Image (cartoon, rainbow, N blue to C red; front, side, top):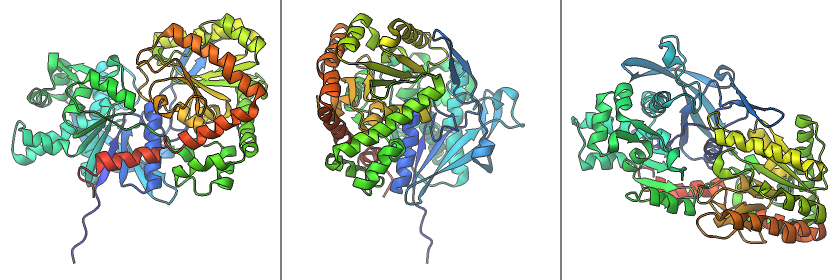
Amino acid sequence: MSTPSPQPVIAYFCMEIALTADMPTYSGGLGVLAGDTLRAAADMGLPLLGVTLVHRQGYFRQHLGRYGSQLEEPAPWSPEALLEPLSLRVTLPLAERLVHIRAWRYRVQGLSGHTVPVYFLDTDLPENDPLDRSITDWLYGGESRYRLRQEAVLGLGGVALLRALGVPVGIYHLNEGHTALVPLALLDAHLSQQGKTLPEPADLEAVRRKCVFTTHTPVPAGHDQFPLSMVRAVLGERVVALLHAIGCSHDNTLHMTRLALTLSGWTNAVSARHREVAQGMFPQATLHAITNGIHHPTWVSPPFRALYNRYLPGWEKDAFLLRYASTIPLDALTEAHREAKHLLLQEVARRTQRRLDPQVFTIGFGRRATGYKRMDFVFTDMGRLRQIAERVGKIQILMAGKAHPRDTEGKELIRKVFAASAALGEVLPVVYLEDYDLTLAQLLCAGVDLWLNTPRKPLEACGTSGMKAALNGVPSFSVLDGWWLEGHIEGVTGWAIGGPEPVSNMAYEAHDLYDKLERIILPMFYRQPRAYQKVMQSAIALNGPLFSAQRMLHQYLVHAYTRHNLP
């Protein structure tokens, strides 16, 4: 009797993956999404694994001065303390040197006991040149040549590692353009097996059948590009020849997203609106839309976990049971929110020595500090904001987010928030919490009364922070972009800032923000608490199930994975 062949697996490649706060291997939404995807796959028992880099120096720890000046320091961590070492080694020629790569393994355990392995690639080995030992140290660090070498280790080295491990990969899921060298490695191996030097259309199709690509970036500058002269110096003439052969050397540049689009059989954006934007950027590609989702057991706060255990048994395994949050008594929901708010304000006091009033309407904003996210937008007219707080009802605002060390605009936004805080004083307390991470995000999303999101349209690919808030009964007050176009029902799941037009009208959005705060949201919170609690309840029931990673992965299974090499 023959031994059955091992089941093919989905290899999920991503430059950053957020698994625990103790492993600072992520910078923001992309990494958090990747971690949520792997956790949901483990819960669902899917044959999936993750591949990323170890980032020994972490992203960075953020410290903020008195006036909001951001200071950064490394966030080193020890893979030796948290990960399982693999004895296997693979090598990769880079810049005419042989780079040795090892891997560490982390096992994500699902609710039913199924585990999803995550492999962290590491070049910090004594046999490597000192320059090569640091390739996997810094997340999004260094100049272009450093980034290209990192992406080579992730894509080319990751494929080599899985082959050496004997993993039967059926699908390679490329999460963002940093991973675009994965299909190039597959193409090169396929040609070697066929005894060919350059590909024909059938060879490209053989690779495309194995590759799924998700793009997350609606901003042209956010897509990695490298001059072919650098590609030749780092990766060699063979790679350049392949790029020429498949038409991916336009303007003597390697555009990583175009490479991934060219060699993937299924490509998708991460929301319906993002698909429209991305399709305009890449008109030759056929892009689909699978809206991101979150791992709901991770993002439910302890008070709401107890609430759901009581009223919605089985909710952890089946996110769609959250639909029945409409049956939870409002008093019980309100008490759970009160506890979540207490936990948040307790942490605020511990970090800042500021004691905020739990009875005051609390707005939360937690995003990466960068220009298009407009974290200072709520302060556009501070006189109007002050009047609203004085005449309609008290307001306090909690904000958090890191600016990339080279993002001068993002750093200036943080300073503007600090200046607004000083100007508003105790009339409207504004507290900026430094070093935003997974732990703080879990508290912030669950403990505020309203989640604010003000991106400049159409630059929000998806955004998942509002999904996490909704899961804890916190309505969103957001610009209609990304996921909120799909999750928004006015006055039911939250409120829109501005209209559905595809491009932001700054003046109109600012007017609408203040107008709704003054006429609708604050009066409801303070004078019609039952009505506000119904909005909280609807946010859970309508947004919770729809924006879960379970739903997202089900769509990938139906549309992307099973149409290729999975049974």
